[in-house]
Length: 501
Image (tube, rainbow, N blue to C red; front, side, top):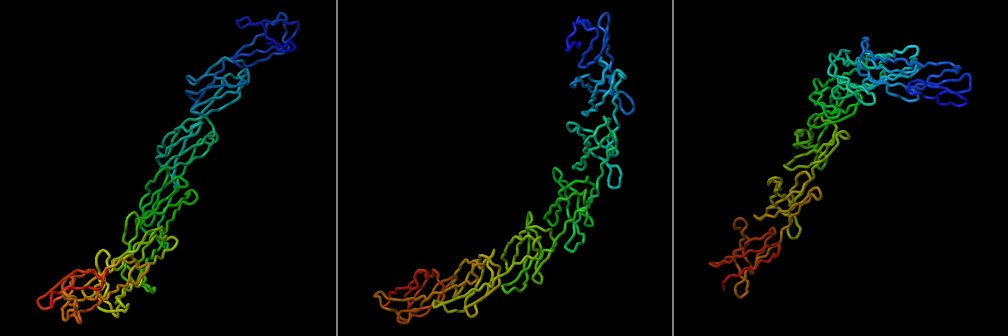
């Protein structure tokens, strides 16, 4: 093009030559080729030939040992980015006008850029650096095996450490590097043009198990979470040790079948402490007095023995947790949840269970024998002044009262009402002859696992307090006998008829 007040196209002959037709004696010329532009001013028009000449731009990629390497992708900028080619034998070439271009070399997903006037120097050189990524422990000794990646538009494999080091030739650039070790990762930015040695260092993580007195104890099983739970090992001397990359891990301590978890950034503090509490399980009676012997278990993925009360209590060091506790006393059990981290003192209380035998007039009476059921029948005691008492855990028991060889049973929750009452009824037996007249001196018995005396009729009647039950009654006079069943719950008056005068 030439400038004639405005830029105008010269006549293109199609063979690399152009004709400028103008009345001006001198013009400004502009040659555009492969997006590059070169201009000449005050060019004489008449009888003159103006020559524009390209240069062979040679873009080279070398490693740190000065050896040419492939495959770098080369671009140049001239109003936009254009492909120059891919290095072959370490070099990409293109004929370009002698201008000051910006060149870009892309290698292993990263790029470097530089300006160069190829009119002055047509050889453009990019050189990689020998990048070393190292993994060392807290004692600065190299260690394996770390997996290394670097970020350049995406994450790319750098390699695995061998003797603590992974190496790769890279263009000088501020990369983000990632070291993965023991399933955790650290990342850091580093300009390898300034410093090509990238260092990652682990810390000595100490996970400790201490009791309530801050004394180290065994055996706790330690795990840490990094994309999954991984074993760190059992405590020895109260401590489990592992070199780990600085990171905010979740740790899990398992002791006595229960677990605690906590997050801790070991880069800030590499000492992770789990501490148990002295869980104390107490058995107290209704007056608040300690009592023995209760058998204690706790639940953590199964029931486990905690021990038997001595002096009314049993203790065990446990991790703070919301456990279910079970107290077994006098063959019955109570259960309760308690977070021993909030309150380590777990209390079970019995209630004074009172069983009474009362007659039909609600008067206390003796001669009753009491049992209760809890997985089997167990002695509760015999009434004294109509009453027998026992400290029992609150529970829905079945009670059995035996009186005058008959028995009644009832179910009662002593946690709701600890007073269990068995009333007898005044049972009356009337013996009549066929004419409906009273029969005197008849011998009356009742059956309850055997025949027992009820009494002898007077004016045809005899009475006795009995527990309400479906008894068989028998009246005998001389050689005459009669029997019948009657449920005293329904009707307490039993009428027996004898075939006598």
